[in-house]
Each structure stands twice: as structure tokens, then as C-alpha cells.
Amino acid sequence: MAERVAIVSVAQTRYSPDRSDVNEGELAYEAIKQVLDETGLGFERDGTGIDSAVTCSQDFWDGRTISNMNVQPFVGAHLSHEDKVAEDGLTAVYTALSQILSGHQDIVLVVAHCKESQTDRSLVENAAFDPAFLRVLGLDFLIGAAMQAKRYMFRYGITPEQCAKVAVKNRGNARNNPYAQEPMDISVEDVLGSRMLVSPIRLLDTRPVSDGACAMILAKESKARKLTSKPVWILGVSNCYETHYLGDRDLAECDALTTAARKAYSMAGIKNPIRQIDVAEISEEYSYQELLWLEGLGFCGRGEAGKLIDSGATRMTGKLPVNPSGGMLPGNPVCVAGTARVAEAVLQLRGEAQGRQVDGAMVALAHGVTGACGQHQGVMILGNR
Image 1 (tube, helix red, strand yellow):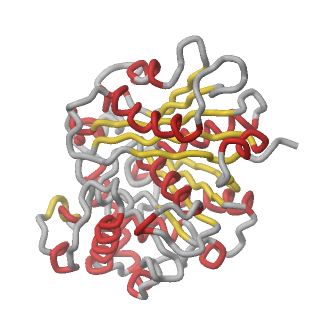
Image 2: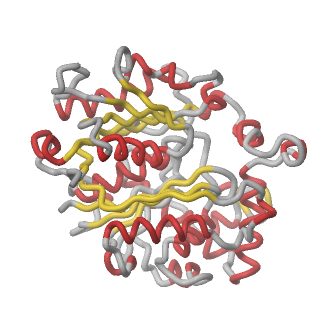
């Protein structure tokens, strides 16, 4: 039977609207150096160091093909093993887990980076759509999200005020997060009064342009216990894709997330997520998505997430604190966001989340998403025992 796999160290940069002072490799190394220093690990080839690296980046955002070439010298990839993931960072953690479970690697470094400030987000997102029929329409993820929000709100009666409460909660939580880019003390009225981008999404319903990096080290159990006194175990994980064409699915639903969550819960022995999970870090590029993803994750029934946030259950003091870190809304770049959700879950389970700590957290959920309207969904369950 394969040994369990633990995350033994995590690190993040502070997220910023512009890190033009460093290149991609230097930005990634700011996070990498922290996990190397904490664990004392290096890139030795004698079996005592890091065996493999998994990097997460995207050619369009880095402005070059084979974007991982920018960071290979910083992850010890010379004459060693390195895999690149071009999706959400949670998938990179999943890949590292798979490498260790395969028996081929014992200790794996994961690093995700992105500098969104280098280009136009709309142009990059437009390239994700079908080039013959959809790209020429000028679609981007914001336009897709607006269509999804409209459909979701119409079908289930979700209100703009309920979506605004997500923005208020998450940006408020970010005030206790030293890595957060845009912590804010705002009200529902502030959100509803902010500039309309694409109806019904307003400026404070969405995240800012962001640069940053996140790194972590995974190890098999026998080595993890030698590297840290606080290993955080990966209990369950899964991912799932929706169909590519937005018109081929009901945007008010999130079947891929439901499927991924069900499999991750089964692996982790979770039968009642709202009772068994102590804290959830959910990737939400837009405020309505936190509500929709809560439903897909099974924390409430279809169309009931509005009532869930109205009840205060997802606040720091509620029965299911969601995004104590602030999530993506205060600023997380793509590629990095899912890795950051895992890192924040690890900090919670180690009792090291400082002012955003959830008391007694023992089981945490981390969620990652890629693509327009949540096309690709990933779920990871972590525990400290």
C-alpha cells in the first residue's frame, strides 16, 4: 500500500498589481526560497533532496511558448525531473501527489506563478474560446461570467445583494491576510454602487489584475515526518471538466464541480461536508461564483447558497467559514489561485493563519477552477491527522 502524502511547507508572495521589478523566475523564487529555508531541502541528486518539480504557468500570460522555461533554473530542473501544468495551481498539487503515489518520487516541489500585469486579461481569455465561431465575437471570461450570473440569478432567485455580501465578506477577511492585494472595508451598498462592467457584474464583484507566486513541498509519509512536526495530509482529491462550448450546458449548474467534489469526498470519507469540513477556501473570480460553487460542493442545495450567506454561516464566526483569506476577490492571479487555496488550507490546519485563523480547524477544503464559467473544477480535502 502506498504511503500517505503530506504537504510539509507552503509559501506565498504578497500579491501585487504590478511586479515589473522582477522577472517570472525571480518572482517564483521568492516563494521557493521560503520553503527551501523552512525544510532545509535542496536539489541534491543523492536521494536526500527534492526529486522533482511541478510548475504551473501559462504561455499566454508569460508571453512566450514553453513558459516553464522561465522558471526551470529556479526549481532545480537542470538534469532533473520537471513537469509543467498550464491550468489552475490546484492541478499542479494534484500532479505532485500523483508523482509520489506512483512510487517514482519521494519529495516534490510545486510552484505556480503569473504576472497578469504584463498583458491584457481580455485578450488572453479570448484565446480560450473556439477560434472559428466564438473568439471572433470578442468573448472573454467576464462576458461569460455575466451570462452565467444572469442565468443563475434568474433560475434560482439569487439577488445582487446576496452576491454583494460575498464581496463584502471576502474583502473584509483579507484585512487579516498579509498576502492580500486589496483588503477593503466595504458595504453592500458600496458593491452595488460600484461601476457596472457587464451586467450584472460590477467592479467590486470581480478581482483585480494581480501578480504573484505560491510554492509548496509535498513528501511521502516516512520523509514528511522528518521534515516537519506539522504535516498536513491530502485525504482526497478529484477534478472534472465541463464541455467547452458554453451553449452546451446550463450555466446555472456546475455538474463538473459536483462530480469532482463527490469523488474527493468519497476518497476522504466525507459524507456530510457542511458538518465534517471546518473551513473552505474556494476560488471565486466573481462574487456570484462563491454562491454557485458552494452549491456544487454540496454545502447546500441548488439555489440555496443565497440563504446560506444571508444566515451568516460562511463568515469567520459561522459554522462553515469560507475564504478566511479573502479568496481570489482581493487579488490572486490565475494559475496561482488554486495553489494559494491549498496553501491557505494548510496554514489553517497547522494553526498558523494568524488573524484569519479558524479555531480548531482539522479538515479543510481547497478548490480550484480554470476556464470560462468554471469549465474545469478541482477539489482537494486536507487534514492534520
